[in-house]
Image 1 (cartoon, rainbow, N blue to C red):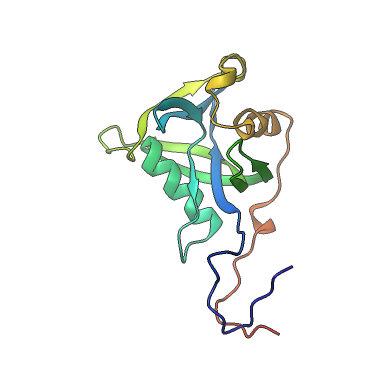
Image 2: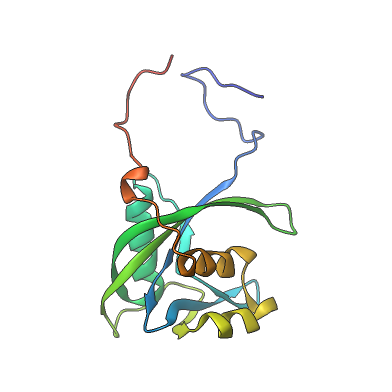
Length: 165
């Protein structure tokens, strides 16, 4: 395992997984999803994206949901943490949250690459099979349906600047 000294600059050759967030937003038996253009293929995904510098995982989930769907949401729980490797070898650690839909800004411009936001049932999502961006999409809906819920307090953002040992 490669270790860095507390003052060392990160080395570009050190492997790091992509840290992402996603939000499962249920409403009347359907779930909020996005169709997005990924390298020329239209795929289905939860509102999801990468963690930005200086933001909490929870803030990232709310931001990504608004940017990709125009929906303002309130997080209700953490559904889980998933680790997945794509066929290209890219590895992801995804923090998936559940949220309530509060209100929709129909005039908000959606993120680049997002074709549209839509609501789909679990059965319609399962039938979409190869159109799912990753297996994490259906797994996250199934986690919500199964009743998996962790308190939001399971994730804590600690203050920056604490001296490392």
